[in-house]
Amino acid sequence: MVSAGNIRFAAVGDIHCKKDSGGTLRAFFAQASKAADALLLCGDLTDYGLPEEARVLADELSAASVPVIAVLGNHDFESDQQDEVCEILTRAGVRMLDGEACEIHGVGIAGVKGFAGGFGRGALGPWGEKAIKQFVNEAIQEALKLESALAKLRTPRRIAMLHYAPIEATVVGEPLEIFPFLGTSRLEDPLIRHPVTAVFHGHAHRGALEGQTVNGTPVFNVAMPLLKRSFPDQPPFRILNVPEIERVGEAAMP
Image (cartoon, rainbow, N blue to C red; front, top):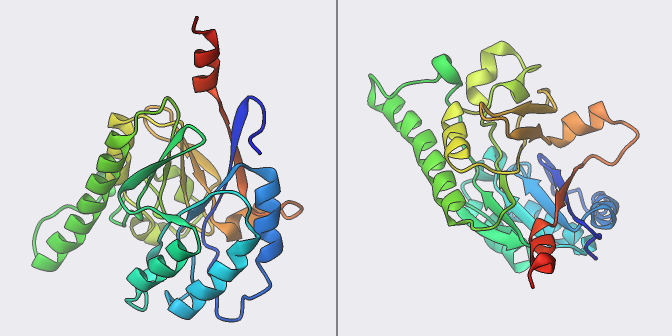
């Protein structure tokens, strides 16, 4: 049931469900359902991207009583069976986003996996070998998918969910040498052109909890290992309360 005045979103990434994870996540998903009106899963849903892992996760998600929206992470691509992983989770009722948008309780959600490449002046450029250009093009294509999804949203309140980080601030804490592999500021550009209420991502298990885009949008790193370490006495998900401004506006109309 939606709480009066707010829509509550629980967000977490990097669940890394394994073949033997059966029975270990049900209580967690039940807790998230009690605390929120929708659950956002920010990639690395499985550990090796195996259909068997996806089936275990789908079974565990049966304990969730709220809408579940998800994007894939790099681990979900490991076995080159990501399409089957998506199909299994979709059949289980999960709304999988890959450059698409949806609306939950009047809040627009745009989702994409994202990609690596580095941040700011340290971002890799499309110059030199063909392999470098292909790598950079992958990041550009993910940014374009995010832009397309955001452009479709017409709701006053919007959320972007990714796996890779769109800003450097939320990967601080990881070894400096791997920063370029944790995300790219190319993913930040669409968030500037299409402002959102908040951004969620995972991937950086030892990163920082919060940061913001250059235009002040809050960005939350919700990697489960980070949340467990930062809040050991709490369930490892992040709650965002989004005001129901649409309903307020409708109530004021004659």
